Image 1 (cartoon, rainbow, N blue to C red):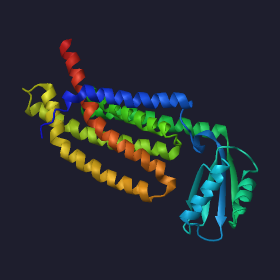
Image 2: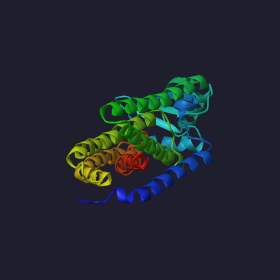
Image 3: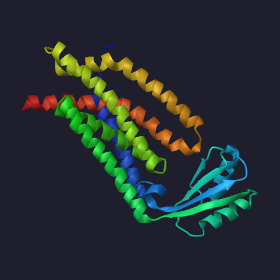
Image 4: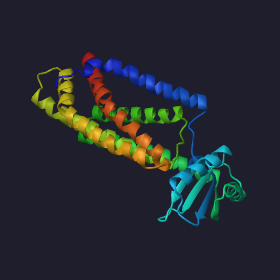
Length: 290
């Protein structure tokens, strides 16, 4: 293959800028991210049924509770699938009794095992820890790639990762999906996946800088991307197959987690080619001009 990826970098800049801008505007219009119970606090109600709860029954309960703005998050737990966990953003001591009365009107037979309220201070601490974990991951990546390659490679990789995070978070805001601890885990997974793709290309660039040292820098970058393209496509597609299956068959509980991974894998593959490598070219061009 001999595709001129770097020749299309300005189009890529425009598309990336547009996607990030749409996400930022959405966050501003909505007044910030739609934080889940983990980050806002609320009430957790644990119910145990007399028998296994089917997916259809779980869906019906979700509809009933959502009509009353009670059950934003309902998760089936336990080996026997006879327990469910309901998370509600409101903090009320009688929330368990309210949910119990609402569901029993529909003929459900169960007992309330526990009702817990998550205070704002706990959720605020969780939010700080989540953001701190992402920040320190970026710092570690910057340090590691600088040691293994050069500073410009590290900055290019981090720029691509920030690009991936912004677009993924923006897509969640556009669709008004909840942002909670599992989504933070998904973002960290995306960072690892995207970084792996980027380092494979960087490694080939480093080799080609020695083999093709008489060629123009832009040609070395294009050759390196083309040489690793088949590997990139195969890896991304096989990963996507697994995640799409998880999204389609994994149930409502992990839909948002799987959705974040789908967006992250697609955008991460794109940024490894169209964000990280153009940054190297721009860095070299500026250095030559000086």
